[in-house]
Every structure is written in C-alpha cells, then in structure tokens.
Length: 231
Image (cartoon, rainbow, N blue to C red; front, side, top):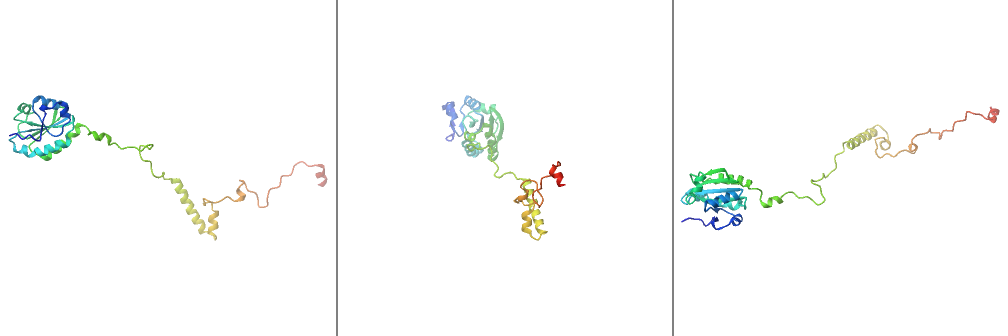
C-alpha cells in the first residue's frame, strides 16, 4: 500500500492551485512534471520507491525542508515515484534511490545520491537563494527619519587643531611669566598670553603719546612784525 498521505497529487489541481500550495508535490504524469519545471524557478525533486528503506528514512527531512522553503512559482519540492513514473526517471538518468535533483529554470544543477540529510539540507539551502527573495525581504531595507539625512550626522564637531595649539601656548606662556615675576597674578593678567586681557586706555586710540601729555602744535615758519620785534 502506498503511503502518500503527506504529499499532494497535482493531477486534480490546476496551475493556480499548484502555485498556492506548500510542501512536497506528488508528480502524477510527465505533463505535470514538465509544467512544474517550466513554471517554477527552482524545483527540488525526490526520486524514490515505496520499497526503498533509505527513502523512507530521509523522507521526513525532505518534507520538513519543503514546508520551510516552498514558495509559489519560486521554489517547489516534488516527489517522483520511479516505479510509477519510470519515463521521468529514465529521462533524468536515475539509477539508484533515493536520488535528489535540483533544477533551476528547468535545468538540473545538482544531484545528491543516497540518504544524506546534511548534504541534502546544505544543497537545498543554497538552491533556494536562486528562487529570489521572499516577499517580506523587499521591505527590510533600512528606513530613514522624516527630514533626516541618509546617514547619521556626527555627534561632535570636528577637532580644531589650531584652537588647541593656541590654548596650549597661552597656558605655558602664562605659566612661565608667573614664575619669573614677584607678582605672578598681575603679571599674568597683563601678559600677552592672556586671552582675556583688556586693552589699556592709552592703547585705545592706536598710537601712544609721551607721559607729558599731548604734543604741542608746531610753530609756523613765517614770522609777523610783532615776532620780529620780540626777537
């Protein structure tokens, strides 16, 4: 008695029904097989026999992978009974069971012979990438804040090397001035290294005069009669 309760038979479904199903598909004819290959990007086929012990052993692994990765028109998993579909098995060169074949756009790209769950899992994980991204993956691009920039702005301003050097010179200048004077505070306050030093009242006009006050206006080189009489 054939054990097929876990598989779908596509003979009673049309193409739209096939596209919405998940899990292994039990191929019932060569025309159904051709339709599956032509209408699906990636097809993983399990060529098995009911009397094959290793086929029964690896069947749960194949079924679990089919439920995990099946996607309409992108990735499909097929069960091909070599006794019932001997023409398909001969066309694919199947001579031992179980044999797993992976098809991409109708062309076989990899063959795994024997019941080897790790090898089958690795091959299928690589093959499903050829089927294209899942529906939800197209919405996984990073979002952007409304009114924001494409990338985060720096949290701090760029380091100002000139400002740092100016501050360093001022610090050491004030330090040495305070060491060589009797009144360090006043000397530091009046030092040119003091960044907060206020200009003296005499320097406000730009040029300085002598301590005696304003310079008297120059005398004229021409003399009057009074000047000559005085002389």
